Amino acid sequence: MKKVFKILLSSFALFSLIACVDTNNDSSSENKIDSSSIESPSSSSLVPQEVYYHVTFLNYDETKLYEVDVLEGHEAVYSGETPIRPEDDDFTYTFKEWDKDLSKITEDVTTKAVYDLTAKNNWGPIII
Image 1: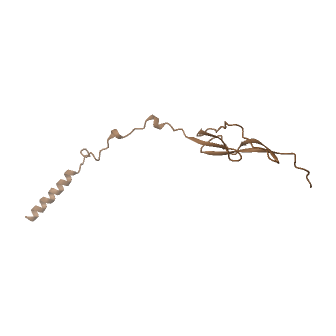
Image 2: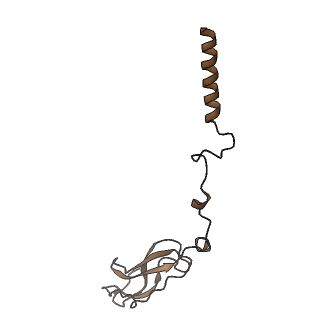
């Protein structure tokens, strides 16, 4: 009798397990993918986003002259007043250029003014 009961109990357990398994995956909502929740790529998501970089223009003494945000790959253009460096006892200074290439911006940039210098005529006699 015990053997028959064990066989019946085992058969019932096996039958219960088989009944719980969904062979077609149709009755289990947990395993289903709701196709309405899947987003298809829209045409707007395929358009490249514009990226801007910050360019800072400094004078010889590191004072900020001008700032501008530039579209990636474009040239940074300085629109401020021409940089000035006051003369000293030995030289006068004329703005020449910026110390970085600003023709194609691909990152944030800080650039500094570069000056041509001209010696004053007060050097005195040169002894050789």
